[in-house]
Length: 344
Image (cartoon, one colour):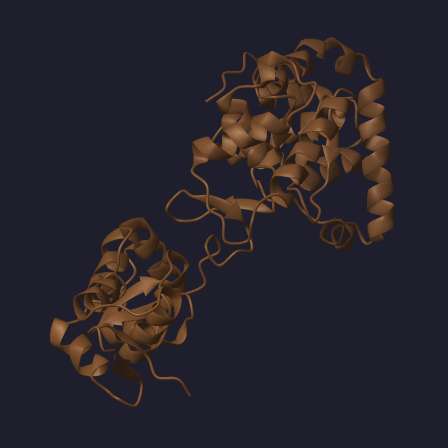
C-alpha cells in the first residue's frame, strides 16, 4: 500500500471552496466526494436540477477550470507533485483501478485521488479501448513504447500457448525498446501487463491470449483441460472431476465431466475411462485404428513391438491389443512373423 502525506478530504475542501453552491454540488456528486461515494451520471445530476446533461457538462468543465486557475490550486502543488512521483515510482503508466487501490482501500479516498488526477495538468487520462484498460500516464512517449511492447507480445502469442508469469515478464521486458533501466523490473512489468485486455491469466496463474479457451474458462471442459495439462499425463474422468473440485472449488458431477471430455476434440480416450490431451500426440480412434496408424508409420512390426507401441498411446490390456491384431480383415501376418496392414 502506497503512503500519502496529505489528507484528501481536507485538500478537496480547500479546492472546492472557491465554487458557488450549484457548481460545488455538481462536482461533489459527479466525482463521489461526499458521504455518497457513488459517482453520479450527467443525466442523474441534470434531473436533480432540471437541466440537460450537456448543461451539467458545461458547469462541470467550468468548475474544473475555475479550480485550476485558483490560488488554492497553486498552493496545493505539493499534493499533485506527490501523486506524480507516486505514479512515476509505479512505472509512469498505471491502470486506474490498480493505482487507486494502491493508494487506499477506502472508496471515498479513491474518489478524491481520482478527482486530483482529473484536475492535474501532469496527468493524462487514457480511456479504455479494445486493447487496453482505463489508465493514467505522466509520460506519453514511454506510454507509447509500453503499448507497442504489449501489442507485440500479444501478436506473437499462439492461441493455445500458455506461459508462466516469469516467462511472460521476461518476454515482455525483452520487447521494451529504449526504456530506462529503472522501469525494467518485474514489479513494473507486471503492472504494465495488467493494462492489457488482450493478455490475461487463467485460474492456474498461466498467461495467454485473453480470449483463448485455455485462459477464459467457460465451463467444465475448460477446467478439465487445465487440470489435465497441469497433471501432465492421462487421467480417469473421475480423477478429473475430483481435481476440478479440489483446485477450483467447483462442484461437478462425474457424468457431466465425462460427457464434456467425450465431446471436446482436445481430449482423446486412451483407455477405459482414461483421457489424454490431443496436443500430447495422442490420436482419436478405436484400437485397430491406433495399430494401423503405427504400422503405416513404422512398417511391419513383431507382435511384441506392436503391443509396446500401442501401450504408449493407450491404457489397455495386452490381450485387447492382440485380439485386434489377429483380425484378418485389417492386419496380416508376414512369413517372418511380423504384422502389417492389409492392402485394400
